Amino acid sequence: MANILIVEVDKIQRKNFINIIKEGHKDIDIFEAESENEALIIANERNIDIFYMDISLKDSSGLNLAHKLRKIEKYKLSWIIFVTTFKQHMLFAFKEIHCYDYIIKPYSKAKVLELTKTLVDYINIKLQVKSDEGKCIFLNQNKISFKIYTEDIYFIEAFFKDSIVHAVDGEYVINRTSLKTITEMMCDIDYIVQAHRSYIINLKRINKIEKESSTSWIAYFEGYNKFAFIGSKYKANVDKYFYNLINEKTPEGSEQILRRTM
Image (cartoon, rainbow, N blue to C red; front, side, top):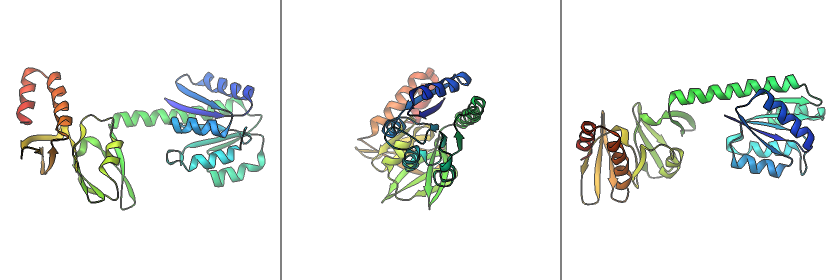
């Protein structure tokens, strides 16, 4: 579902604009603001996909607001569309703000509906593709960003100030990125857990767990010759996952999981 923020100081114009968008799209969430401050609060609390904003605002200008949005990481490339009477700012808006479109009032209802449909349809396609592909994260290696699917990860280990991702297609050294940062990226994935102060592991890919000492265990992975450690402080994270998995399986499946994790 797409999130749209309308920033317009005139309440009547704002409501009319919202009604136009709702007329063409039922499966969207629309937020509204009359000032820069209100808009920034909403933008920080929510993930806005499309911004429609006037140049003239209650406490600032749409250009200033757009500049501040571009400084927020998640909005560096977001769609910003100006809806205004000020023709003279058009070149600046495109060259400096990199806005998606610039609509002059009085605007065409058909133009707004068509533009919104194009963007919302694209968002829905992206969401569908992401759902079909499965979970993934984006990491940086030597200033190059790449995508890795979480199911392809065996484990991630801390290495001084860096992290090393052990994956199906190789190892990746993620410079100056802590395990905590990577864990936060995958906080909604139950099979990726911190198992040691220096290791995050993919519980789905574990082949065997062996006790090494009174305070540590070794995790081995299917089809991979390297291993990771499990510390006593984090063992409950591992046990909880397999306990839940066992309860979801048939008795035969439960025995297999138990043998695998002894």
